Image (tube, rainbow, N blue to C red):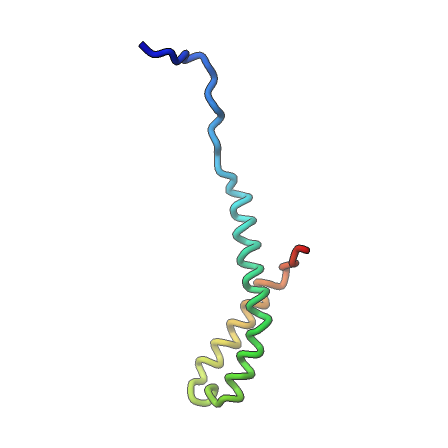
Length: 81
């Protein structure tokens, strides 16, 4: 025989807060893009100076496009202090 009373209210069901998860994910991606866009110009200059840009121009173009995408995605990021 069970001692559990069915009229006793149970604990409320925890529903995941999807909005908070999406906000956290958006902030993480924006922060990663922001911080990646800082050293990428140095990498591009190193590729130009090393001559890799002439040997494999698609690497150079890919780095420039990656830098532009990171700058566009990360431009709204504000580091918290």
